[in-house]
Image 1 (cartoon, rainbow, N blue to C red):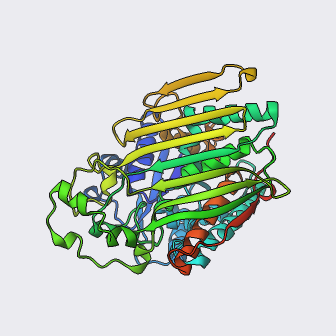
Image 2 (image 1 turned 30 degrees about the vertical axis):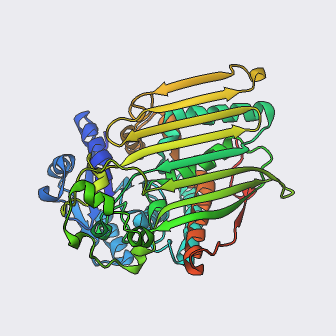
Image 3 (image 1 turned 120 degrees about the vertical axis):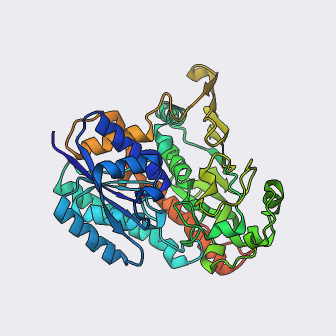
Amino acid sequence: MREIRLLIAGGCGWWAELNHHPAVLEMKRNGVPVRVTGIVDPVEPVPTALRPAGRELVAADRPEWIDTVGRSDAEVVGALDRHVAENGCDAVLVASGPAHHETYSRWGLQRGINVLCDKPPVLMPDASWDREQAAAIWTTFDEHLALERAAVRERADYLFGTPLRRRALTPFLSIATHLDEVHRRTGEGITFLNAIVNGGLHRFPIEFLKGGAHGYLEGVGGLAHSSYHYVDTLGWYLQMARGRAAKLRVSLSYVNRVRDYLAGRRYQQLMELTGERDLALEDVELPARTLACELDFSFVVQVLDAQNVPIGVITYTSNHSTYAPRENGYEKEVLNPANEKSGGRMSQVYLDIHQGMMQNWQLIKNDRVFYGDSITTIRRQHPSLGEEYRKTEYSNAYEEQTITPRQLTQSFILASGGYEVDALHLSHFATLQEQRLAMRLFSAFYELIAEEYQSGPGIVPPAKTLLLDELISPLP
């Protein structure tokens, strides 16, 4: 068996430890000849900087450390090229901070190296407040689309994949399947879709000075963290049941930024409940780009037909400063308290989807992260279409009756080495082409957030109109 050679960008981070490192180690134990030849990270992969899986992997493979501190993108790319010339590379696993995904993705696309890129595939720093940077999300993504098409023309088995967790979870998949089924039978599209996602991610002011994939030092906030999963879900479901939708008119209805959170001293209860009395935790000066980052936000997407008649509405609300059972105080060595069991992070999701008078779905999740993942779905449909009501409970939904991120990573690695893998696994990776609608919505959201900042509080930026024929690939 031929050895599969990998690079991990962001290989000292939390997601690499949770997913990539264990995936590779399990493959090794099963006899798959896979080796991590390099780790790209500002942190040196030495035992004191790594958690257990990372330590074991580094001890086994002794990967080269490609340091990114103080290096320009061009210098990092030069180091990657030198490394590949000496070691070869079948795939790069991108788990770095989101604002750096673009650099590694572009590098892999241009060189025909398979790319497994965490969400979102493209994000520009300072998109929370800079109009040009926000608009560059879409133009840069469009460049990557062209690179993907060129890579596939050059090599038919070329792979670029974003593992979008919701697309692999049975409750979310069931909704998509039934939306498509009813759409094919009746032609009815989505008329109302309300999505609310709450995270409960309260921080002390000093903690906004910490980086990481879910940090605020790059000038992007909550929308850049986990929201892309749900933005993609909105686009995915709309594609399953488009109906007469021809245009989307996107507007920003609410945004609350880091500066607002601090000005209102909304961390005060956190200090009281955790017993923190050190004024140094709040007496800090944050960079302007961090203060401008979004924490909580809400968007309204009007669905229009070809004659500009409103035929539906989609709302998406994401809140970080909601209920949180955080118990731990400030710990200097902890990069992101939300990644700790006592960090108070919540996973509260509510979806309410109406397909005209034909069908209604509700999905409800209300969990403390790391303490289980239970999802309830309720389906109601018109009696003429079949069963009128069904309620389904999914316990441990992220690990059972689903393909896990670790399994998807392993399949991607095997496919990159030329080995046969389950086609179902590969279908859960979204190519860049398949993410066009999600990325256009994501970019439009950031454009509106940046325009609100430039215009000033209370001034509503004009809505943006998106043409669906330009963004949705024809379904089979």
